[in-house]
Length: 457
Length: 144
Image (cartoon, rainbow over all chains, first blue to last red; front, side, top):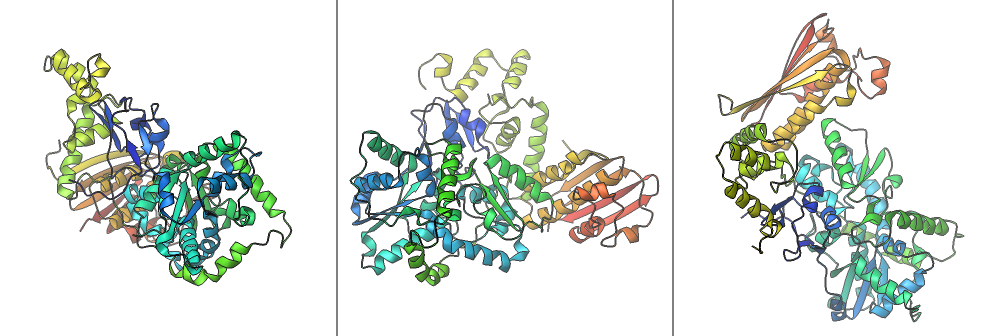
């Protein structure tokens, strides 16, 4: 049994899966195979990007979240919200309305993740100065990207900026503040409202850092639906909102989770790339050259970064537009107006937060290797090469592997047979090496009996 | 299958003047080494050296072929091109020396780091060249 490195928030529900292979075809790390008419995930290849979740036509892939009622196990119930949550709602829904409904749902505090960026930005600038030999430094903001680098670009784990994400800094700060105000540690429940699966996975098994100040994770679509239903039903909230104004964020803080949110603030030559296929293409290119003249890379797995998170409900382009509007409005406020108490309070905790801002080294976990042992890897590679000579290069996926090359590798690893290929089957049938019945059985093994008009397996 | 079960051979063609495809062979070689579970640092140096050499062929030669022999101990990358050749190899090995046109430099290539950088990254480098015929570069990397 292979060592399991990652916790995954994406769960495949076998009973719902119809074995259509849409997920397999979009997976950027080729982590999915079809067997017995069902999609199967290779855990260690998956980076939690969520492309499969978006592609599934029947909702067979779910994002595991904490049960909402868990919040009531705590006396102090903090909703840790990323700014993109506010961008989900149409303009006519006010931020106060959103906050009021969140309170009505049971939260006692609402705190924005982006408050964590205030401390982080300075720490990042220092990091860039301190480690010029590690250029280009890569942000660890997007957990799917951190995992992608671990499994596909292991040599680049050295370039990762080993600093906590805004989410963790915000949680650490808020917990500490509540404790200093007299709350007991075990009475504090900090619940992060997540726009994606990768963040959940990162909270449940943090990369490079073993504990998290976050108690639980709730999916953003769940909260959005709760709040929006409430608003639509004419409920404007009991106006119990007593939190400091959420507009206390600076414009650049509001935009942090969007594309160029970090790169625009970093010194030197900084680039931003969003959408995981774009990131893979870019990193492939980067590996070839010694690119010492790029200082900083902001890499995000989703198109339009967190606005395109798989658990968001709003259209990502509208979300970006709204957040930009919020930011430009915040930017035109007169200095002193909407006095930023939170920022002042947070600065008192600066030293404490800076002491806890580092994360442990992120280890490479290459998934490209055919074997740990180079000799055996060589034999398998020769096998792959031989097998490829007889495969059609069509990448039709009928074998249950996403590409011909993936099938060849699966065969070399002992996980598939050459006769899984439909072209090979036809050829073998003609040569009478394989009967009609046998090839039918093979297809049923891959795609399940139902697809061939028979009863369930 | 190859006669010796512990070596494999690959070949790639390189087209002179076509920068769009420059780096293809290097990327393929990188994939091979990753699959063989070669040490990350060695992969990095191999790819940097190979990419630099591949771009040199694109920038200077009419055409070329890259012959790769990989075993469980080492990889040898032989870049054979038909082109102008290098009149003075010692001079070309000096950092900053470049014959690249300004157009090539604008594309980010030809900063005169080519050969010295290949030598710096390679475990072994052999160059032979004949003016108006072509150049052969042999890069060897050892895995242990």
